[in-house]
Length: 153
Image 1 (cartoon, rainbow, N blue to C red):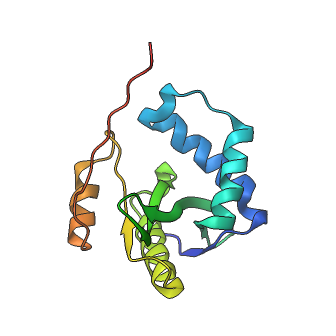
Image 2 (image 1 turned 90 degrees about the vertical axis):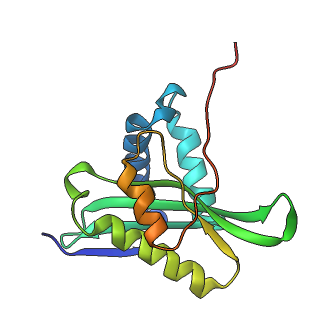
């Protein structure tokens, strides 16, 4: 098993993060929405500047995972901020390693260190294995919402 290093992303990591976001899109139920590389790149820069973007790399510096959060207030309390996970992706071959755990733990610690939000919201997809939701619960999260998508006809 490789050793992974998780760090906050920098502008130099955007291309690698974009590649992993493309893979996330391709494998997710959101693939019903066409991919736009320019939009995704602009979004990643926004997350880099206004949220939290972290990458996991193996000991050779090869990227294996990415996690991204938007930070903002909730509709029912403008003074209460949350970090809302928007994407969390680990490459297939690294999914049964520590990479995903390290990404989540790093993000939680960084959000706590920043001290600018009261909650973290993690998401699951309809394709996410059930054990991931169970793991979130074991980590202290509560299930708060599920989403559904429909095309506008």
